[in-house]
Length: 359
Image 1 (tube, one colour):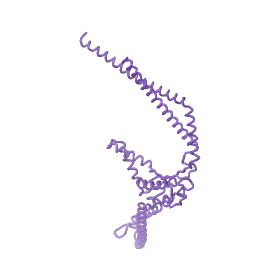
Image 2 (spheres, one colour; image 1 turned 180 degrees about the vertical axis):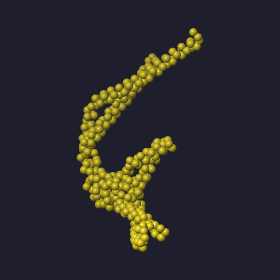
Image 3 (cartoon, one colour; image 1 turned 45 degrees about the horizontal axis):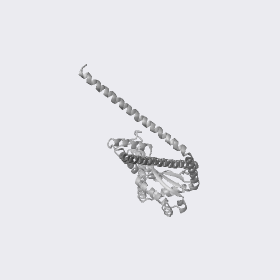
Image 4 (cartoon, rainbow, N blue to C red; image 1 turned 90 degrees about the vertical axis):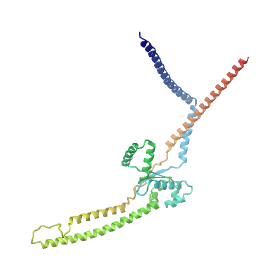
């Protein structure tokens, strides 16, 4: 046998031994994990069985507490409107809603009643205001496409999400505005005051007035153009009637355009365009697309706050959670006592050994 073969055999055997030890260590690692999981489950089972009375009592007390909360706390009703405005940017809407919501937290609702121009009794029944941007499916698709484009330039996903969120907030024009009240009968009475609150904002109101004035001026200008075009059409009719009578002895053909006459088709086209523009202006003056209520308040018979069963269930879960915390704390204290006993026992053993050596 050559020296090369002799040297190869020990290497192969050592490799086999190393692989065996590696697989053995991996197997022991996973078996220890599995064993610890089983021991943990057994410990939880023992803790539950040993403290079953505490768990049942606290669960029942929590459920009863939830039921009591239902009867003690008043029902809260929630509704929303869908508002679109070209001039209500995300930051302006956020500031306006925050002001209203802060006024609902005051004990005296006089200022809230003054801002919304409602009576104090109605203001006392308002609990909170909130809002969220209304995102259509087309906008969601556009934002996702924009995010994909940004991923090619920016690696940090969190930065991209913050940038897109701020961009979508600043460029929003449609919002869902929520109101929470104690008396559902006042919900419909809040619609007009809430719309006036946003419409009378100095930033919004100035632009709405300018837009309305511009549309009215443009409508007057178009009315004048239509009157002139109607006069022109009458002149054209008279002109063609005169030409027809003058050329009665000639051919029956009428020339619609030459060097001395105007093409009537172009006149009618311009008249039609002016009339369509007039209708569009009337539509804008009536609908006010720069500030438009898309969907008003809906009064729901069921409150938005949790009902009897839900509060009882949540209360029971809370009681079970408290029981779990007490049991975990008790086990932790027992564990600390065992460590303390082991430490004390180890110190006593060392002390005995030291005394034995002295003897």
